[in-house]
Structure formats: C-alpha cells, structure tokens
Image (cartoon, rainbow, N blue to C red; front, side):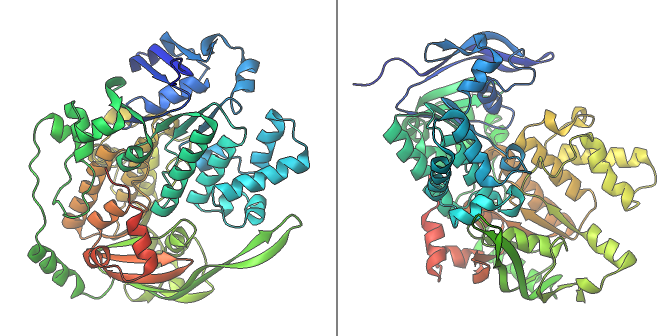
Length: 559
C-alpha cells in the first residue's frame, strides 16, 4: 500500500534576496518511496529551494518570506542551529552541484566521508574506515585505498563527484537532495550512478529530490517531475506523461532545446524561441558539411601534439607509499584552424590533463606540442605571452576558477588590461558589457560577485572571460556541463557563431555525447590515457570501431 503521508512537504514557499523574489508560492510533496525530478533553466529557483530545505540559505532561512517546509513531523523553520546540524547529513543529505567547492581541500577524500560517519553513527573508527572503503567501491572509485588517501585536487572532476555521492549516502538518509549529481561524469559512469541511486532508493525507501538540467537523465530516474520557470512551478505530474505529452509551452521548449543525435541543426532552438513561437529549424546537409571540411583540412594545423606522455606519482594505501600513474600515453592529434575537435572518454582517462598540458599548466615527460609549427617549450618572453593570449581555457569548475573577492566585471577586464587591449578602461568596460550580453547576462551583473550567481551563470562568465582576449584556440573543458538545456543551446550557438566569424578552433571536451556530436568536426575517444579512436564525428557516431566507443554510445540517455 502506497504511503499517503509525505516525508517532505513544501507549502506556499516564497524566497527573496533583497527586493527580488526568486521563488514564488511554491508547493510540492515528496514521498518516502519515490524520486521526484526538478528541471528548469538556471535561476529558476531549483537550487535555492534545495538550500532552503537544508537550512543553508545565507543568514539561515531569513530570506524565506512565507510558507512552510516540513520534514516528517518537524517544521524545519522552527529548528535550532544545533537541531539542524544533527539532522543535516544524517536524516537529510545533499549532493552539491560543485564538488570542488563543497569538499575540504585540506582533508583527504576518505577522511571527509569518515568524519560524517563518526559524527552521526556509533561505529568504531576501524569499522567506519571499512564502511568508507565499501562506499568508495559502491560509487566505483578506482582502488578505494588509493582514493581514500588522495586530496580533492588530486582526482578528476568526475571522481570528486563520486566522493560527494559517497559522502551524501554515508549515513543512509531518509531524504536525499541531489543537485546536479552527475554533472561532471561521463555517460557510462552517469548510467552506473543513476542505477546505483535508484537501487539505494528502492532498498532503503529513501526519498529523493533529483535536480538536473539533463532531461535524458531525469527521464530515466524520476517517478514524478516538477518543471520550474522564474521561481514558479509551471508543470508537474508523472515523468513519463510529461515527456510524452508536455502541456506547457515552456516544457515543450526545454525538450526541444537538446541537440538531436541523428541530425545536426544549423542552430539549436532555445526555450525563448519556443515561448515566442519563433522555431524554424534548418539542418546541415551532407554536401555543406563536406564543403566546410574541405576548407578546414586543406590548411596546415594550428596545433599539433606528437607522442605526448604525462605521469603522476600517486599515494598508495595508508602509509604514504607512492606509485607511478600514466595519465597520458603516446597521444597524437592535429587541430586545424576553424575546426572543432571533440574529445570524449570516461572520468580519469586524461582529458583534463591533456587540456592543461596544452596550456603548459602541466609539464610532459615526453612528446612535443607545436603551435603554428613552433614547439611551445621554446616560447619565451613576448612569444610566450602571445601564446597565452591566443590559447584560452574554459575550466570545468566555474566557481573555483573565479576569484570570490573580485567583481565579475573586473575579472573579465583584467586579462584585457594585462595584454594591453584597448586604450582606456572605459573601452575595456564597454567590451566587457558587450561580452556579458553575448553570453546571456546583463549589464547589471557587471558589479556582482561570483557567489551571487548560479552555477550556470558562473560558467557563462568564464566563457566571456575567455572570449575577451580574442583567442585563436579555446580549450573547452566541460564548458557547458553546468548549464541548463536552454542556456547550453545559447552558448553552443554562440561558440559556433564566433568560430564562423573569427575562425576560432576549439578543443571541445565533454561527457555529453549529443553535445559533442553537434559541435564536433572530428572526434577523439580516450581511454586510460590512450587515444583509442579518432575520425570524422558523424562516422564515429554512426559506425564506431572500438568496443569502448560502442559502450559509450550505448549509455547515452534518451528522452
């Protein structure tokens, strides 16, 4: 018999920051045996609602204007700070959107999970350590004993997210709030994590609030669906029904903005297009694509990697022993002017390490990187400064790559000042305001700090900063992974427009294969540091040669 008493009841909730109301009269319920998905664009109120349930809004819950949040028999508004601390991480837990910001950089990964278990359970330290290793194995971290001893900065973004998931489920909570829990994970690990969360939820009868911008994922995990827009609940119901026949125009727009797998639109439709009834989709023809590729590949490469190899020393076990780990192993590729070269592979395969090596943020044991025919190791003085201006990186973690004490306008202007672009500060400000508009932000955002933006908005700021120097190459390392589906479409359209206008080249790293297929001219597949498949993007997707590539494509969620 279905439980008729909700474990979580949110009624008439309104939240405001200053004079701006960000959540309007929101009501919904979550039951102990179900997974409720929450979708919507950035700033729709999804994460703010989650933080209000956890009592983690700035200055507590003073921003709540009206409404109630009840967990079982408790009114969360009425709990003391100590009562909330006892509840949080124990009965109610949360997987945060940005793992590097949520994890303590000075604590080993295993100790962070261990601390939570010792705080909320009666297990001995020895038994708690064994439980940590079990959880690490459960979320499929490589070699749990090694992972236990590593610091957050020593593991990939996907592995950081798996640590967060292990931490969140460590005390077997009654309610798990998962805020973009698979953002940094590749498709195979996404599928495994979704299966894991569903399995845990069924076995424990744990309730789950699953917040995501990935419509494919939410279609696979959610029983019911809440669709939010500008702080309001615009549609709710059975997930299967909404995906099959969405009633609201906004929901229809969300579903239509995802890049299709079989055809390549010249431009992706956005939610705004759908709301304005301006959708007219034209598709790239095979003839046009062939002509474009003829122009790209008749030129010499702008960047060439030859026999790249990168190794790290990693700790083993409990006593500080170290082992040699090969992150990049004999990698070769060419990037041409005006080309978008896609790079995919599971977390920890070496994608981000390769990106950092190109930017000289990581040194190489072997191999050569040629930029416009010159070995980048030989660049010095003005030549090196020119290289750093012309090759930009959009980082995976949008919050960690922004200085929290600097307003975003200054953060975008600073690279222009360093490289002596534009004669005056006024001109640099005008350029910054133009860039903010291009990435979907407004002039009022110029004087705000990074913490005042959503994860998706912070990533748009990082993209604007990369564009500020008018580079020849942009390395996009999961650059749209934190963006909702509509803003993602805007940014992908923008990147393509800029490439057409200025002849940029992109090394486009992503776990989202539908996005990679839409963006890429050629595609590289990495596994365990090696390049295992390389070819024209459509050919790789339609006829993958390697078994691993076939597994990646089979794991793509579908709506």
